[in-house]
Image (tube, rainbow, N blue to C red):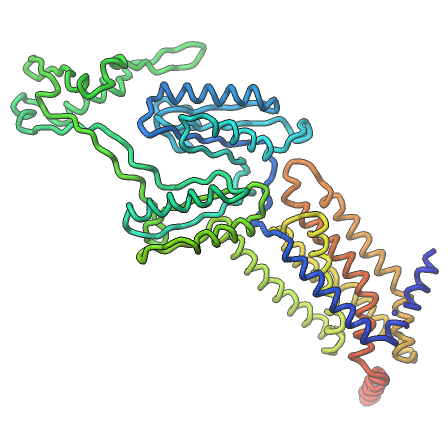
Length: 529
């Protein structure tokens, strides 16, 4: 069987040498056709991984009481129990910091916010992916009328997340807030855009007690004493702790809800002066309603508000393109600058770095081969196989419907060093045949026949070694399988093309008698020594 393959290739590499223009033209057609496939291949920064975890954050109307927030949390937990049997464990943090658990230390909190961490059973124990379950939760949570904003995302510890951020730079709060809301509404309408959120919190209602310092001084009190009285009655005082089963619980004493839930009740607070007399809080000042300013974020010393979008079953690059199209249709105020960033910006920077790395790798490979062959034409012949490795990458990504991520691009860069070895073996043996006195075309044909098996063996071992990585389906496999796919596709394509295009390029860039002249010069120098 192998002898038949050897003969077939020999009869092929001879036909190809007699029809070099046809072979070369066909090769270029194949290359440019494969490069056209890139148009249909999406781009991502890092593939998002199914780690069997979800984060759910929910925002109710600003000013919602903790008790009402907890009722909504119970509804969401009910949805999880009823519709997501894959749930293994979940924790919920609701209300303000003093009401929340450990989760409140690592997430945005407030009386109107709910934060949940959901742990699913392993990927091998369920039929639905993490993203399918997230879609179900988004659909059901969106039906609750009291919820004004929500986010259901993966918890991939920074290895996966793919967000596109629209950064709005501007000093005026009103202008940037209005523009952020306008952009948010446009992005919500984009197919595949989920978790559309604005980074700047809305103004928060507060009650301020404005003291009359003269009256405070008249009763022999200080502002610190008055604020302490108010805090102990509203937030509560912790005089001791209750111990049970080795655990300690705070004992909090404060007024009942009905005595602290209105301005009138607050003004009726009774305070004891240092002299022992009793006065009402309203005698020391007045309670006013106040809207606290939003959180202010800065980037490059400029005020910025960010509208963030998570692509759902849409490549990151495609989503960024759709967002840029929507932004172009907006009337941007003169003092406002908009930038599309987030993971998309990181992706662009990473791809630029990898492109420079690929150029540097090609230069270094060329220098090494030029020094070893003592020729500039031989490295050029061998390096004609590199572009076709990228053709194989494009074809493999297209067939498997895999996006071009940072990991896949890294695999393409690795191919530069892998694919040239076949060309080196072929060219080196061709030179050996010529040194032994065979004519140019005869030497090329003999090298193709003789080196076919070693080339196929080295390619097969690398491909088989990458196969488990490409076919892996376990947790975290989404990160590394694109590298296996790119290496396998590039190596298969380049190996086939190497056995045809490298001999043809050898026949085009070299001439009969070159090796004889070199051998003559070498002998002359040996004689002089």
